[in-house]
Image 1 (cartoon, rainbow, N blue to C red):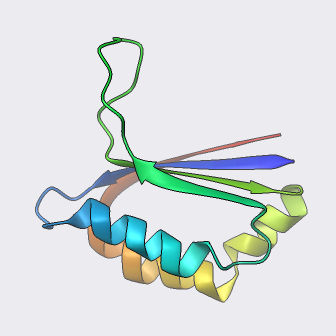
Image 2: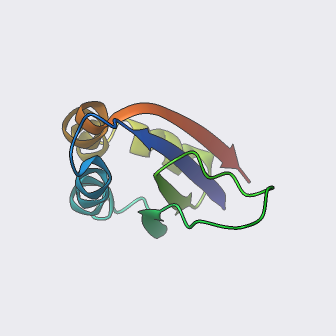
Length: 99
């Protein structure tokens, strides 16, 4: 199992950027058959100092392994997500992949 976690910082100059990004993930990424587990959502505020709270949206995908994640990266729906949802709405993303 490989987990692919993406942390997004949305563009503050784009109204409803977080909602548009989440909707784009639902539209373009959820249907990709390589994805075994899909979860996207907004940052949850916390009173704990150790909880990162500067981002707006996170995505957590799971794949059977590295080969499936690599195929996902070039899947046409993933490429559509990058162009139509990520680029218009985000200023930064940080990715964590782990097995």
